[in-house]
Image (cartoon, rainbow, N blue to C red):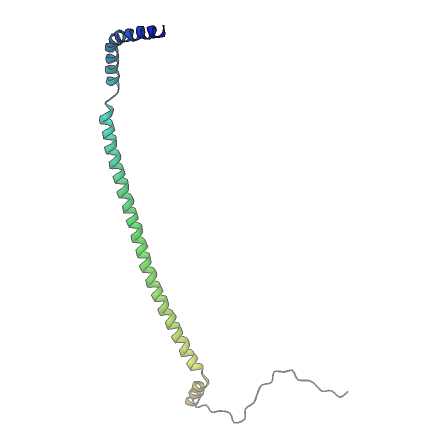
Length: 137
């Protein structure tokens, strides 16, 4: 009985299919008329998207190039400043050595003699300790 019902439905389908085919084709034509062709739009969208990605990538690379250029300039400036700082430190050391050489006792004695000064024959030393008053008492 189930087989008989399946055969009846199967034999009924081709006639129903042939009856609804023109209606389905007409519906498909109406729908395709309402909506534009999706294939051409998809291609245009892909093309614009690819162009957009290319422009964004090129702009990003240019920004990276600019940043790298600025960093390289800063590196050169930093290297120049380090060299200048080393030169200033060397000059400071040379000035300190010259001052130390002028402060050396033998150089001070030679400069004093050149100015006409002479060493004291009776040196007196300064005593800064408080003195005690001795009282009789």
